[in-house]
Structure formats: C-alpha cells, structure tokens
Image (cartoon, rainbow, N blue to C red; front, top):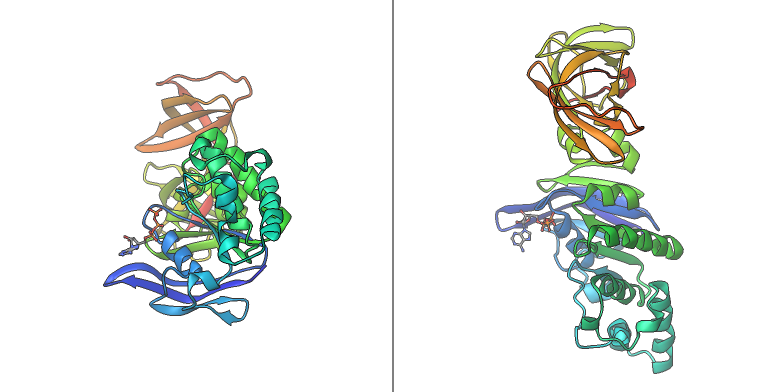
Length: 356
Ligand code: ATP
C-alpha cells in the first residue's frame, strides 16, 4: 500500500500536449479512477506512474520516494492492459508464474504463490489450460492474477473490461472490487466508462484535453459538477443557459430564453458562480430529478421522444425551443406518446448552477 503523488506533472510529445499540470495525491489502499473521453490523457498519466513515460515536467512519488525516472521493473507495480498481453500458447499457470520466474524464486515458492493467485480470481481448476482455450472473461482473470501474484504495492488497470460483453463487464467489475478490498492495494483504474468509474471508485479524476476538470468521490462529481463538461460527461444532464432575474434571500430566480422562470438555492452551485442581475449563467438539471405533475418550477411541455427501458420511462420533451430530458421511474404509470402534453416540475434543490 503506497501513496502515489503526481507533483505538477506535464507530458508533451514534441509540441503536442499529452497532459498538463496533473497534481494529485492518491491515498494508500484507495481505488482511484482516471475518467475522460478518448485522447484526454488517461493512459499517458498512467504510463508515467508505471514508468513507461517520463514526465516533461514535474515529479512522481511513491510514498516519499522520488520515482520520476525509475525504470518500470524497479517500481513493484502490477499492471493489467486492455488486451491483457498474455502469452497465448502458454498455460494459465505459466502465464501467472512468469513474473515470479523473472525474480528467480524457488519452484515451491512459485507454486504456492501462483495457486493462491489462481484461487483469488477463481481459476483454481484452470492451471493447465492454454490461454487460447479460455473465454475473454477468464483471460481477464489470468491477467489480473498475473498482476497480483508479484504482490505489487500499486495496481494499475488500463481499461481492463473493455473487451468483455456488458453482462460480464458488470460481474467482473464486482470481482475486481472484491479483490481490491481484500488486498487493500492502492489501485489506479483507467476508463472512459462513467458508470464503471462511479460504481468502483473511491475517487474519480475527470480529465478533458489533458487537463484535470474535477477530482472527487462519485456522488460529489455527480451532484456537484464544477463545469458543463463534467455535468454532461458524468450521467445525463440538461444544461441550460438562463439570465439572473432576481435574488431573494437564499434563492435565485433565472429566466430561460423561452421565458421559463426557474428558482433554485443560490448555494447549490459550483464554486465559480457569481449571480449578477441580467447576466447569463448555466443550470444543470438531472433528468431523474424532473417530476411529473404539479409543484415548484412547474411547466407544460410537449413529448417529442419516448423510450421505455423497463426501469424508467425516458422522455425528450420540448418547451418553447428547448429540449429537456426527463426520466420517470416506471411504477406502472401511463406511458405517454409523441405529441402528448406533459406537466412537469423541478424541485428547487434539483437546480444546480454552474459557472462555465
Ligand atoms: P484513450 O481512451 O483513447 O486511450 P487517453 O485518454 O488514454 O485516450 P492518451 O493516450 O493519454 O489518451 O493521449 C493523450 C494525448 O496525447 C492524445 O492527444 C494523444 O494523441 C497524445 N499522445 C499519447 N501518446 C503519444 C505518443 N506516444 N506520441 C505522440 N502523442 C501521443
């Protein structure tokens, strides 16, 4: 279990920016995720922790040890890649044992450790199987066992579930989480899948264009996004421009371009919001917080699209020129059709003001 510290790390590729000023401290035993769209710099950041890239600027520390330019094989890191990077013609046992043989351990010691790792990922019966005789999910487990068998102080996982189908992905993410909690190993996980990040992580670092957008616990990032990018990248959000119309005590009233007045709590806002009369700010409203029927911030809209998922009825409705995503939990309520009118309201606490 180690603290991983990135001290103002920048990586450039020639003139191109990989990542800029990444400054984070990952706590011992933490499950920490780098999340963002393709090309945002997740893998580049991970590679600097692994030692495959050295930073252009800044430093990397494991506990108090400066490892900025230490070669990968000296870092005691376990790593799982998207494509697993297993040896296809070797057995499960041989694949898992590989890292230990490099370390010149005794045969008996190796057997003990490999069997323990196989048990951890529930592949006790598969030791003699060749990799190319395994399913994708089983290969993923071998890759995980191979990373864990060296008893790493840090575990790095780069999109380890992307080659699995949806159902297996959900099962395997629980499995990874179980093992991580059992071992308490500091874990850094890379994904572009926000559901995966939310479900697994203690904290998430959201990145875009090589720059950190926000670092926080899943509920913090979801409920208190710092900007438009985070609000719309994590889950669904209605992000709407509106002009500040009135501030009264703790409440703010804004007016949208379609003349809709919406009232929310001034404090329910990202840190950079200033309320200046007549000036435009952004609101983020989660589709699942918009409710059917009468209440505060009430309006009537026309149903444009209907999507029945079983768990919920998802509508896109139109009010004036604005489209609004609404998610109603399915309790057997009537499913409306395109062209129907719907009365909706937004609880005041569900309006979140964002600065940019
Ligand atoms: P993905 O999810 O697609 O893997 P990512 O978030 O991991 O994306 P990175 O691979 O870290 O993104 O890339 C960040 C930026 O750095 C991109 O603009 C990429 O083109 C650039 N980059 C990454 N590696 C190199 C390299 N070896 N040479 C030049 N540019 C690179």
